[in-house]
Each structure stands twice: as structure tokens, then as C-alpha cells.
Image (cartoon, rainbow, N blue to C red; front, side, top):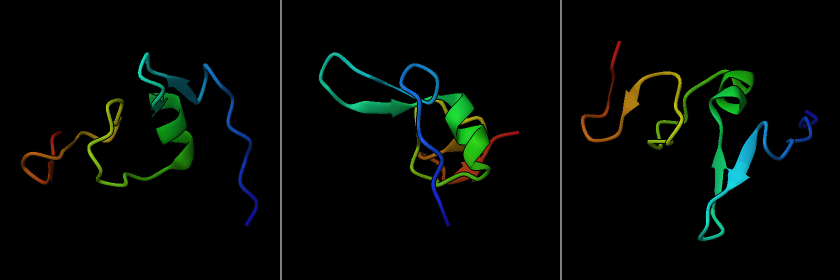
Length: 54
């Protein structure tokens, strides 16, 4: 399966430390939660509790 090209500023950005952070838009395009506690998770996953907050 081919992967769509990610667009900087739309799908991700770099932190001052050089880390890549995926945006909410990217997560919605991907269509599922990876349950990794992503900063911009639109699915409401809380890594501390291991549950989805609705």
C-alpha cells in the first residue's frame, strides 16, 4: 500500500529540539489511534489511564 506524502506544516512540524510532531490533521487522515499518547491526538486517548476520553 502506498503512503501519501506528508506535508510539513500541515501534517507535521519540528520542535525546537528537532523532534517531529504529527498534527491533528495528520492523525485524522491516518484514521486510527496508535495509543502512543500523541500530543495532538484527536481520538481522546489518555496514555496515563490507557483509556479513550469522550
